[in-house]
Amino acid sequence: MAKLEKLLRIPLSTKKISQLTGRPSPVTLEEFLPCLGGLRTNDISGHGTQKPSFVGIHYSPSFNNSVLPLTFAGVCVSGGPDSMALAWLLRQISMFDKHLPIEPVAFIVDHRAREGSREEAEFVAGELDKLGIANLILTMTWPGIARPSQLSDFENRARESRYRLIAKAAIERNIRHLFVGHHQDDQVETVLMRLLRNAPSNFLGLQGMAATTAIPCCESVRGAHEWPGYESFPEWIRRRDAPTYKRQVEAEADLRIASSANFEKLVTMPRSEGLLIHRPLLIFPKSRLVEVCDVHKINYVRDKTNNDPTLTMRNSLRYLRSTHVLPRALQAESILGLAQWAQNKTQALVKRGTNLLNTLQDLTFDLRSGVLTVRVPKDFVLACKSDPDAAANALARLTSVVSFQPRDSVPSVISWQNIQDFRQQNLSPRSQCLTIQRAFLRKLTDRTRGEEGSVVWRLSRPPMRAAEVERATMKFTPREEHETASAVQQGNPGVASNQGIWSAWLFWDHRYWIRIRAKDADTLDQIEVRPFQNADESYLRHNHEGERDVLQKMFAKVAPGKLRYTLPVLTWQGNVCVFPTLNFLVQKKHPSSVSLPVQHPALEWEICYKSIDEYFLTERKISIDWRSVET
Image 1: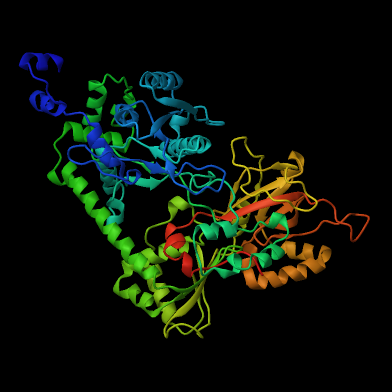
Image 2 (image 1 turned 180 degrees about the vertical axis):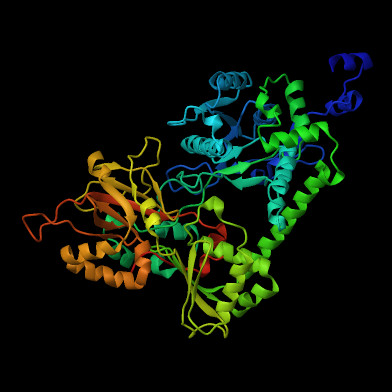
């Protein structure tokens, strides 16, 4: 480049030199900045006179809800040219303008799946040091597996483990935004693989990768999809500004009386401050990222396995695209156009689904049992026939609120058969029930309110099978040092707030986050969480008759019938001791006295519902009757 400039005796732009030499031009910072999307509050003008500013939540354990400048951004670096170019571009932002305080922190994952992986990770860390980029090597473990790369599902397991390692490291460092180096060639290969693996029956599978998404594979990592602390329900509802919720906000004196146990802590909702994955390089081909590294003398590593077409389908497609001229319909321009068309269609579908959800009436959500009651109007039922795709999207999102289905498995639409069944049961005069996406829907007989033709439905978790009960029986582990302490520290008569040890947060049944405080590690080790069972009724009847009567009344309101067997309970030495969502403590009695209580094994607990579709916390929060305590 320097020789060419000297020969022509004029300074040349990178773009002009690329045109003269036939080489691809490197991605410039001016091209890169507009790709940061929602992190920017101003666009760069054609002359570059306006500078973008970055905003984001730099969370802390306090309740300060102000939006602070984003100071640190995680970048996932494999050492290849795409991720190294991304890290370099992010590093240039603050150098480009001191008023853009963004500082990349690189996460390097040593998969330990082949010899030399540690040395390679350390080489990448050294190169990042030269670029002035802070970095951290995260080491993957494979307990009991000598050769993990030989596993049939190695790629999926490595991907899940990689995201979880990065999520935990980011949460520890208060980082909420993660950047990955997926580029245009990756997007083309992704859509082609979806076409080859299973020709989609609709456009949903052809969208490719989105520019910004929630982090995948991390549902069980506390803080990946929510603020990692505990926020009381009145504070949460105030933050959400729901003026129609009067039970908790306007009658807090009654609330405190009703929840005097357990530091007055109720089951609550999580604050939505999860990790976001950003893919700002999707519009750039890999060749331009390689050129970034070459022009700016950035060293990178080449993974030889990426060149073996026999290893993975992606490698095979990469080989075909580099050695053959594919039909026009399978070339990059056509595939990218197909992906954009699918994205536009999906956005239109979600909008129509949202419009249908907005027609729902009389929503009541009981956080204690995860039960949602809703009146479905006639227009919604008619849409099941006139616009079944929109109805399928609306019902998929509605049922996901109560379903125990893993977050990454929640579909965008439910099946055509589910839509037909739902429509028929709405038109039938009989009370019926059905299961959709691991959510149990029971049609209620109340027709005293609402417009003619509307139907009331109760949505809940289905009754648990034996295998599900076994999976939902879980033990607590002590809290790690980095985990956020309780966001609410209040006095509780007879129990010091600093006594005992906290457990780590535990994600139970894909519905509730729970953590407890016990006297010591031995006591904590004897406490489990599991579903309430029929055998527990016999235990309570014989040992806690008075408390059982109180519970029966609570069950009738909160979890009638078999729904009580979907409630979580804490057990100590095998017996029920706490109903955490009900804030009900089964008192232990001293063996020498029928009335003298002894110190309870669970000194305190905090519980909150899973992070749900943001739609219900924004568009419909004001119209929902949230319930977390009897007043």
